[in-house]
Each structure stands twice: as structure tokens, then as C-alpha cells.
Image: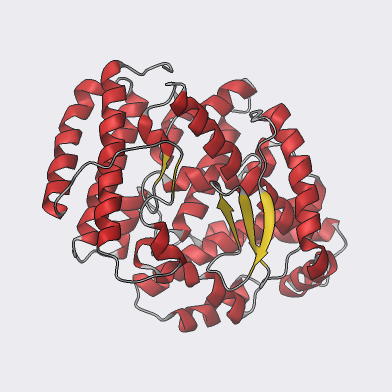
Length: 397
């Protein structure tokens, strides 16, 4: 058992995992459509066998979660775990009310389900990314005076030939694996093989059970983008994170709910945020090219949040929003429409906020803990379940 856990906390974890699996089973039973996102359900991946709690209907779900919540103050152990269990239970209760047919505002979904306070990402934040991007591109010699032109030229100059994309990604993944073994966690020779796919609602996806990194060949990729995907999907991102959690749960060093990936919940921002900070975790930010890539990635991620807000809070169509957001992202409207396809599935509507809010939360944590021993930083990130709120508290504790 890790520090702060108790017999009561472990029992809570088992109950939370079984209730979550029961919610997933009830949700899947009501799905009337096929497709990649529908097949994922609420729990796309579980790294341990968890028997679903038999739940007859959504009222019984709410009762089970309310009963669990009542136990948290007395049984959760330390403040971090109490905060995590509280937010995750609130999140599941809100998602379950959505499944039961409750009409919810988009802001409510962000606050209750992802447990983030962001609505629109402020213009000052966006301008900060643009300033960093312009400075880095200037160091690389791109100084036309028009940022959109400089971004287009830089991306064209660094685009990887389509017939080389998989091989380049594999090579970057190999280097990331070596760095991850040394600087994050050594998960042995575990590997995830890059496989090209088409017509999918994502640009890349970690198929952890199948050990495949599915790369959508319908997009073009710069070398930086492939480097980022190697770290996000594999080392030290989803592959390492899930492998670590699988080991800890199996050895009884992490409560059972750590075995589940639960979509569009309080757990989502940290799952994506750890992956999005992979380059930092590997000490692999190499000069202005990577600085430019990170700034552009964060700008586009933030703007996709704002696009989601425009669609779900303001009632605009994806086509309308793509025309507005694409030029701000230095992309074509068709590319933006594809990137927004993920949120066309009801459960995934708020999910793009998990990337930006999670990246921001982990980035802030890493900045605040530069003087911590590296092992302590990695243990806090990977070995404990966090929300942005509990991670911020951990940094300041």
C-alpha cells in the first residue's frame, strides 16, 4: 500500500471501480449505435478484471454513488485521496444523470464531469502562445512579419513524407523509450507498434490491449508532431502510464479504481495532461523547433476548447466554428472539422478540454516542483490518481 492509503481506502477503491464498471455496463446496454466511439463505452480500457456492480437503473446508480460519497470523509485517508474520490464521485454522478436523460449546460458538464473551471481560454493566454511561437520561429529564421505565413512555411519545411511517417514515428518512439526507462519508469521491453489507419475520428490512438499505436494517415505530420505523438501515446505517455497502473494495481500498491480509464470524467485531464507533457518529462525539448511545436500545439488545443464552447454553449455548428477557428489555429477549415469530429459523440462533447486543462495542470505542477527529487515527481504523477485540483494541492503541500 502507498503512503496515505488504508484498508478503508482500498475498500472504497474496490467499490468505486465496481460501481464505475456497473455504470459502463448500463450505459453500453442503452447504446443503439455502432462506431468506434460508441464501442469504447465509458471505460475504453481496464487493466485489471473488475466485476461490474449489478445496477438496475440510473436511480440505483445515484443511490450507490451517494452511499459511496458518505463514506469518503471517514475512510479516504489523506486529503489528496479524499479530494480525488470526492471529485470522481461527483463526476460519475453527473455523467450518469446525463445518461439518464438530464439536460445539462455545457458549463455544468465541464465543472461537474471534467472538474475544470475553464470556459473560454482567455485571449491573453492565446497571445502568450503566439508570442512564444513567433520568437521560436524567429530563432529558426522564419521572420516574414506574418505569423501565419511563417507557421505555414515552417510546417511545410518540416513535414515528413507520407511514405516515411511510420518509420520516423517508430524511430522517435525508440528514442523516447530509452529516455523513459532512464528518467520516468522502466517498464521493460513493453512496446506499442505504430500502425497506419484511415477514416478514424482521431489523429492517433493508443490501443493498449492490442499494443498498437494507431496513426491516422489522413493527416500530414511534421517531425515535431510525430515526436509529440511518440511521447503522448507511448513513452512516457499512455503506454507507460497504463503499464505502471497495471503493475501497481496487481501488486496491491494502487487502489482498484486506478485500473480504469474513464472517459470524460475527473480522471481525464490528468490522463491526457501527463501524456501531453511527455517531452518535458523526458528532458527532450531540444531548441527552438520544439519550443515552437509546443507553443503551436498548446495554441491549437486551447482554440479547440473555444471551438467546443462555441458549439455546445453558443449553439453554433461545427462548420461555422471551423471557419472561425481554423485561421486562428493556422489550419484549414477541413482539418479543423476533422479535429472536432471527436466531440460529435455525446459523451465526448467536453473531452477536448481534458487535453488543454490537463496539459496546463501538469505543466504548472512540473514548474512548481523543479526542486523536488525526480522520483518523487514521477511517483506523484503516475502512482496516485489526481484531478487538476488535487494535483495543484500536491504541488503546494
